[in-house]
Length: 312
Image (cartoon, rainbow, N blue to C red; front, top):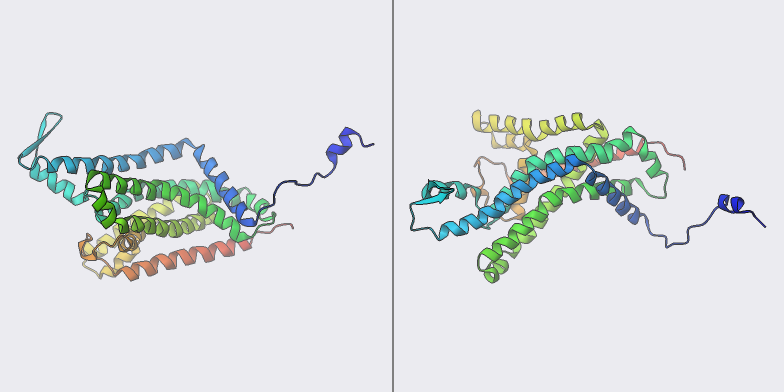
């Protein structure tokens, strides 16, 4: 008879149910989400994004309350009298009335926090796999390279939708409760589909961009600087060319976040003539730029991941 130590050294086959490689992508996404949840910096950025959400959440209540004060010339906040016309003008710019502009503006302002959040997530979830050689461990398993990319994109997409799509859906539900909910939900059901479509566009484009820049730079600080250049400096450059030098509006295509907003506005069925600033490129041009960026990132990922040597 074999001793206890000999039986422990023997191979013990897996007796559970074997799943396909797609389940490995889900497992990698789940592990990546848990890893980022352990970071206090993520919770700080998430709390910052929630400040934007609560501003829109209570702003919609404020708009409904103001409609009951139509006969007043001023509104008092904490003992301070605010002219009704100034307050109405300020809230009108944000469109806190449950319309398509409400959700478009909300996702636009959330982008400032999402950019920093994705820079952290990319370096932590993807960059470390290349920096520390963990990718070879993943690819040594019976999964393909596309399953690795899918798993990481699912994790990144989870955080994108947690900060943008899910709060926007809550705002849509709240708007229906503030107004005639039967009429609002029936007439504005397309807004819910538009929010989901906007979230899908952000997920596909930003997740591929996050992975490509994380594979290229790998560290948090360089990645944050590049993302600030893409989403901040290029925006300033595009605004300077179009608004300052009165150049062709197609120069605004340099602003990737504005391109995503134009595609999202199409999903939300926002009238292009109501988008500000008024000098905007065509929606199909913005969609073409977004698709080209996503395709270039995926091709770069394919090249870099195929270059990783693994032992079968």
